Image (cartoon, rainbow, N blue to C red; front, side, top):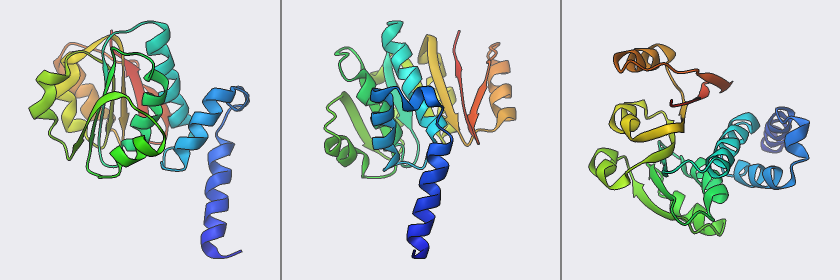
Length: 193
């Protein structure tokens, strides 16, 4: 094997090693996670956590849009969009520094009622967004103060590359607490109540 093929083999083996058996046997979840993995560096656990949260939004009928903000966030946004796609009231907002996000949605045949912005003009668009059911910030925690108040009760907040101390400080200043669930590496989530 050549070095690149060897690296791909080990990366793939590590990705599937993190998958619980119940996820592997959930045919739809497994299909979506495997498809998105080809475009993402997130682990199985991280992608699975996003998938489960998106399913909870639909099952619990939590109102609001999906907002994803960060560099190369398109694959994670596409995973969530694939779950909420049938919900005509929910839009997917993608703020990504990579121009590839829109192409990825087309490639995966996703047609969410959403908006794509190259870069991070979130502050300019926050009034257009309205209620947020799922917020995913990848290395863009500076956006949390801009949209936190728009996240509905029961909504999910995912953070990657998070700094626990700064998150605790931010929540304490608002009189809020989070039952932060670390999913994998620097990837964590909590529900706003």
